[in-house]
Image (tube, rainbow, N blue to C red; front, top):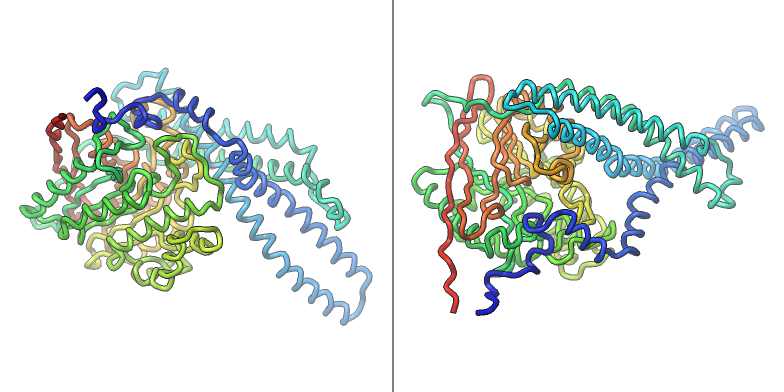
Length: 579
C-alpha cells in the first residue's frame, strides 16, 4: 500500500510531545484556540473569584457601619434585643458571602499562588542543575535542592511584596451601602483588594514554604533495597501505570503518537504475562496508578474493563485511581481544546471514572464520612443512593443534571483498602489531579488539604498497619536533571512538599507509588520510599520492548520493607503483514 493506515500518519502526532516540540504544539494551540471561550474561562476562573474576594471587606464594613449607627441611636434593653436580632440576621446573611470569599481565596490559591511558588522553586532548581555540575554526589545535590527552595521562598516573598506595594494605593477596605447604588465603582478597589490580599499571602507563604522545603528531607535515589527474614509477612504488588487504553483497534495515544505502540495489544500482553506469573507465584495486589484510558472516553473504558474481565483473578485484586488523562481534558487532534468551568464534559469524565472504579473495587474499598475522620463504608454503598442521578446525567448530560455531582466525586476520595489484619497492609488511593479545563495544562497535580488530613486519619485508625499510598502524580521531583523545564512544572504535584511533610511521622510505615512521568525510578525522601512506575505502552513502539515491576513488600519491626523488585519485560509484537 502507498499509505499503510495501520501504521498511522502525521495526524496521530498532532498533540504528541514525543514527536513534536512544545513550541510546535504551542503554535498549533495559538491557531486553534477559541478566544471567546478563553476569555469566558478567565472571567469565571480568575476574575469572578477576585471580585468576590475583594468586595467581601467592603460589604462587611458597610454592614458593620450600618449596625453601629443604629446602636448609637438606640438605648435600653429593647434596643439591645433589637441589636442581637440584627446581629443574628447579619450573621446568617453574611455566611454565604464568607463562604464565597473562602472559596474564592482557595481557588486563587490553587490557580495562582501555589503554582507561582512552584514555578519559582523548580525554575531555580532547574537553572542550578543546568549550570552547576554536581556529579553523582547525592549530598551535594540535596544541598542544591535545599538552597534552591530557600532561594525560591525569598524571591517569591520579594516579588509578592513588590506587587503588594504597587497595588496598595488602589485598595479600599471600607465601604458604605451608597457604594452599591453604582456597583461598577467597586470593580477597581475590589480587584486591587484581591491582588493585595493574595500578594500578602504569597509573600508570607513563600517564605514559610521555602524554609520548610529547604529544611525537609530531600529526595535521593534508593541506595539499596531492604532485606527481610524468611518468616516475615510479604505482599507481592504488581505496579502498573499509564496504560492509556485507546478505543480504536489501531489507535495511537495522544502523548506518544507513533512513538508508542498502536492499539491495546501491548496492554493485553501485560495482563497475559501477569496472569501467568500469578498462576506460578500468586499476587496480592494489582495496582494501576492512573491513566487507564487515553482520553477518558466511554469506548476506552469499555476496552479497559473488557481486558480486565479476561483475567478474573487479576481483576479481583486490582485497584485503580484517576489520572489526568482519565478526568482532565485531552484531545488527540486539538491541543488547544478548552472547556468552560462547570462544563458537563469534565463532570462526565469524572463519573465515567468513578463508575469504573466502583465496578473494579467498589465492594473492597471504603470511603470517609463527611468529617473525613473515619471510614464510613464501601464505595459501592456510598454511590448507591446516587446511581439513578449519575446514570441520568451520563445519558442526557447538561448542567441541570450535573448539579451535586461534584460533591459525589470529591467525597469519594481518598479511598482506602483497609488492612486484613491490624498490622497488615492497607492501600490509600488519592485523587491528585488539579482542576484543569485546558488541554495544555491538564497534567498539573494538586492534593486537597482535607484529603491529606484524611490520609493521617486512616493511619490513626489502623496504628499498626503498613500502607501503600497510591497517587498518579509524583510528590516531588526526582534528584536528577530533567530534560526540559516543562517536565518539572507542567506535570508536578504542586503541593507535593506539603504532603511529604505531613507524612513524615508515618513515613516508616508507608511506601508511595505513582505514575504520570513514565519514569523508572525508585528513591526515598527521608523514611518514605517512593516508587515511580514506567509505562508499558508509552515509551516504545511495537518494535521495542517495554517493562513493568512486581514489588515485594515485607513487614519490618519498625515499619515496611521494600525488597528488590521483579522486572518483567514485554517483548516486541511481530510486525504487521501488509497486503
